[in-house]
Image (cartoon, rainbow, N blue to C red; front, side):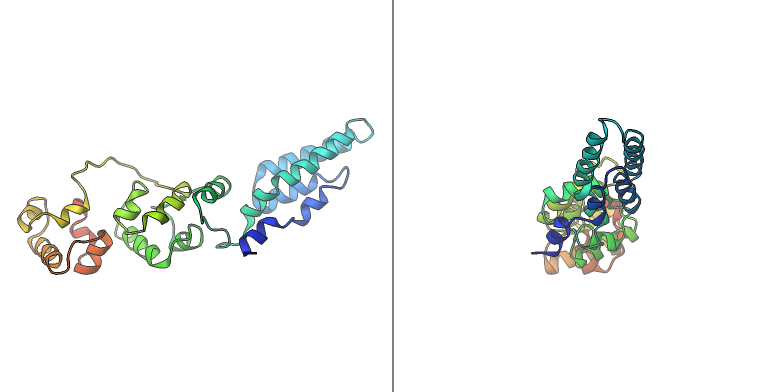
Length: 233
């Protein structure tokens, strides 16, 4: 059994404590504290107070059942929320949706390389490229750019899409795309605002080794900083 599956199948001790009549609601308070979910603390406190106040009435039994049912229903969410970093990764888009619902989304423009690897499950080579673009000021606006700009395989992007978001969004016209670097002549690139030396180096490298695969590929092959041709991307 895989580690992540084993983790999700376990039952935390606090769930068993919810079986205690009267004070079992405090198990939810504990779970809320450990997972940093305040609403659970409120539910647990409310159930405990109700159980104590109504302990001698016919409502005591339904409240006891309610605290047990609530505890078991929250168990999976608790395990996802408190899983060690890097244990639960989005192997499928369905799992990514579940993780995003509990943990929230990862902002591609603000996240760290550690987030990319240990939360989104991206291979380090792609995490390095995304971090490089972040450091040079590139702003991602939609999931497809992870493939178009950073060279991340589409299968990876589709898998993590439910877990990602972008802190800054703006509209781009289709003609403003990095792929122009694969088709325009030096003169055309210069008219678009590139320095002559930059334009000539981009075209020379393209003619020598073929079309560029991504913006990262342009940067790696030419050695030119992103700022020197960023406005054309």
